[in-house]
Structure formats: structure tokens, C-alpha cells
Image (cartoon, rainbow, N blue to C red; front, top):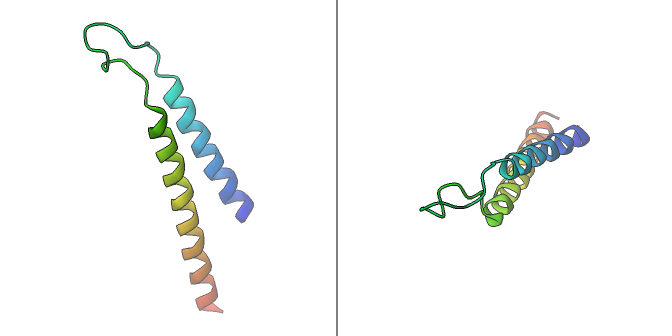
Length: 69
């Protein structure tokens, strides 16, 4: 089960990073922020939030499993 959750989290992170890099047009034009890709720190925050959510869900599932035993 840990392997499945870990692979799922890794797949989510890879999809998030790929989507952030595949935004297309470079910065330019009158408004420099209009077509710029996501900032690097946003990607770091997404990864941190994904890891935190996976950890919390794992601990919640573990606690629920031990309560029934």
C-alpha cells in the first residue's frame, strides 16, 4: 500500500511539473506577467503540499486501521 501511495504522489508531482513547463508562450508583450510560466516557488509549494497531504492521509489511514484492531 505504501508503494502505491508513493507512486501515486510521484505521478501527481510529475504531472504538475509537466503542466507548469508546458504553458507555451514566453514572457513578452505589453504586460510581462500575462504569458509567463509559473514561478519556480509555486512548483515547490505544490510539491510540498502534495507530500504533506500524502503524509497526513497515510497517518490517518494508519490510525483508522489500528483503531479497528
